[in-house]
Image (cartoon, rainbow, N blue to C red):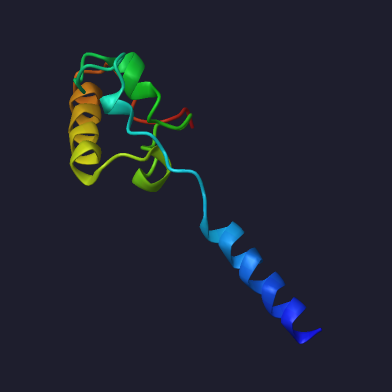
Length: 87
């Protein structure tokens, strides 16, 4: 009886900690490089309100997330992307 409860706890922990790995989108063949002029690609990394999606959700590396942030800031400065949602 006690052993069955211990086994159930370990299997439950494994399921909670094992989630599928995200693919790095910049390494896919359809995306060559991150650039502020590719605003259609940049919009995939933004929410409806214009916020950047976090790295843990997008699966980007730290370097890729920094490049994405800089590209979004440049696109916002040039008014290719909106700075946020309507109030």
